Length: 250
Image (cartoon, rainbow, N blue to C red; front, side, top):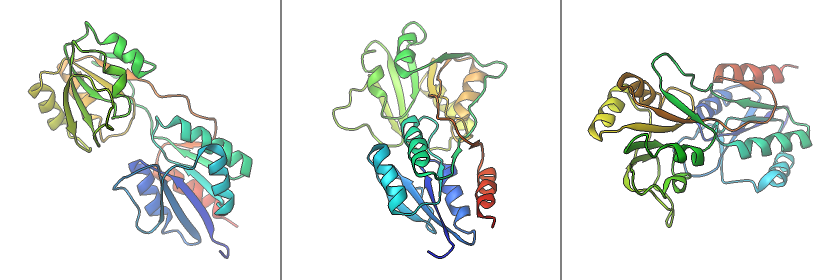
């Protein structure tokens, strides 16, 4: 390996792909980006790894076997389990770790948010709130709403739910962001949406629905982020690159 530093980026976000692409251009760096599943985001100048690690022990083994020098966790803000595993494995291997975590959205004047801690809590507040719901939580949590047979859901996600997943009544919309304000405004009107359920993912790609809801006076049931492990955290790719360059200094 010479003096090259091996950097493992845990990805799955647009920021991770951008970070991998920029990091791969730095002299003396070899970048491996790991994705949990299928995605079209991949930095071609980096080594791409697909699939899980098998918990903390599996990740710890990988870090040691691949002689990883630095670990950057750029997973989704709701991927708390892998972030916890990354923290423990990096600590066990005494490897510097950084979290790249986009800032959460904050309530603004005109917003009507109902903040909840989980999808189960979100499902509990929907009856009586609205009859037609725009559900933008991804495919993995659909079952939390499947019992609400009296409501109608417009469910947007990138990939269809797995077979045998309980799904609430309504329509599936398979689309990948970013989504413009104009398209979100049009969508809410076309389907006569009365309320939105969203995870507080942050970022610009899906913020249009939040602005549209504000304009239309629609309530947003906002699922709050899970707690993340302690550790050095940055909010953008530029600062992550600065952190990386600092570790490369002789």
